[in-house]
Image (cartoon, rainbow, N blue to C red; front, side, top):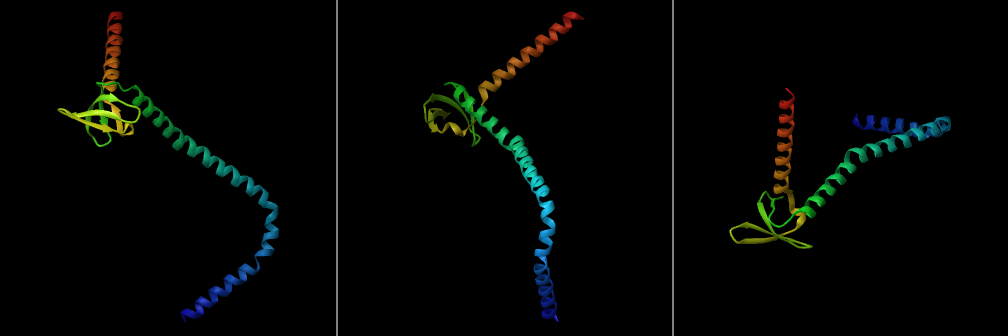
Length: 141
């Protein structure tokens, strides 16, 4: 019973494949329009991928490189591993950081997640600007 059903399905599939060339000639008239639609669709997918994936990734990489280049000895850094370290020496290939009392370790600059000192300075400047703005409003009242 199951074999007969499989054979019938195979015969129907073969008949459909045999009748395809007749369908293909009827569809060539609309194929040019479909080709243009397909190319436009793939183009739009590419634009969306660039806008939402590639561009932000490049921006983050640029910011990371600027942060690494702007790091100075004495800055407090956060590593990928979660360690908070102090930068002692900056070399072309490695950062020498202090992890504890007299524990100096060389790390790859790519392992630096954030410059905590620079973030604290930016936060302090933003707080001062907000206070100055608030003081300016109080003078006007």
